[in-house]
Length: 216
Image 1 (cartoon, rainbow, N blue to C red):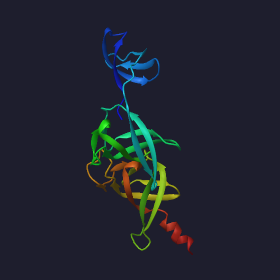
Image 2: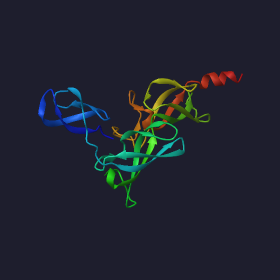
Image 3: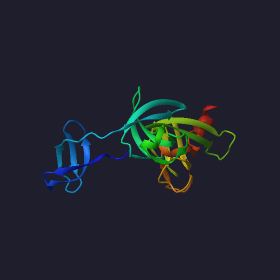
Image 4: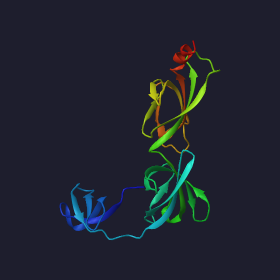
């Protein structure tokens, strides 16, 4: 969700006329920053009406339900990330679908028109790896799942190590809800993507040789 902005007089550059301010900290006396001159000061903000909306957050094949308060005219969009408080923890989530009050689904809508925000946790994620042996054979290809922070980056051509697995990335398959990507698959050296954006990583298993020797 976007940063809250309000109109307020700025004691530095516009004491007589309200200008746009960014809200840094809410409260009885809110802390705001003038968008025109950058001056930070305290001011009183009139409370605006909000709407309560249901949020469903999926994580590792499980779902958690929570509720958020939003300005009625706030624009929501698939791919947008936001912080939501659940009974268990605060989660960083990404919007995957918007269910409207009339039962339809859309990629973009104002909060007042939305019944449920469907989302996926992206703070900590599980990434699927398909690993094939270094010798190029496919009989020992295996799939594993590793847990890691969503902002960890995978790069084609790089040898990386997570969860006891060492592998060289060969291809990245990007999720449909990921933004700022031009295509679904990436296989050129230097191509990269964040863990939270990945559906699957195809890689060469750098541990395959040691496992083969251990069998003797």
